[in-house]
Length: 318
Picture (cartoon, rainbow, N blue to C red):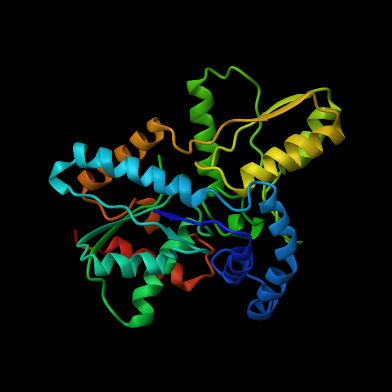
């Protein structure tokens, strides 16, 4: 189960940020090996303060473990032909790291592995980064995998730098498609807008940004707002602090909003665990190593590892 992860304790925040700002799959900075550690060190106190306001750490490992347990319990019943099933957590920026999960899988003698992204919509900077980590694990050792790999690379979060979108990243279209399907299911019962959050640093990001939209709506007399984090399945810093505190409380008071509420994350919902199990069951029975979309490299991609990773997964013999 692949995800970004989050620091469980305040003392983990610096290493989390260090890995994040060093990740060239996520963002490209000038002299990144120098600037990345500098930014991580500078931002650590502020981010630690934010985590202290939501209980002292990220709950994402807790929720991912609960979801994994529920998923494999259902899978053992739904797919007895491939049972027993076991889940492993592979985070990109905190322990257990993706590479550590692979080591554990090898020790367990796993023969068939599914890299299951926990980002419902595909982006090169999120799912792509996790898949690149798997490819690099083998490439750096000059070794071939001992297990047969396939990947659930998208389901049908995290906004992107505009330069990533301009290279052809499919994330905005996939998020927009998700929103459209949800609103169709709800009969378009309320007016809505698709907005973006999590802007970091001075570089241009996808917009409009959530805080700017909240201000604009309040100025126009729309003071009862429901925020729906459509690209996040579990609570973490961006829902619990950014949406709930920064926007729902602080910004809401500044703008004179009457109510800013957030839709609950899926977290430990049993129906969500059933959905995860359904996704894995369908994937296993398809006997496909990846989606067709994964085989297409972004038309203006500048990362050579992406092509190698896509070949790695698309050529797996199941």
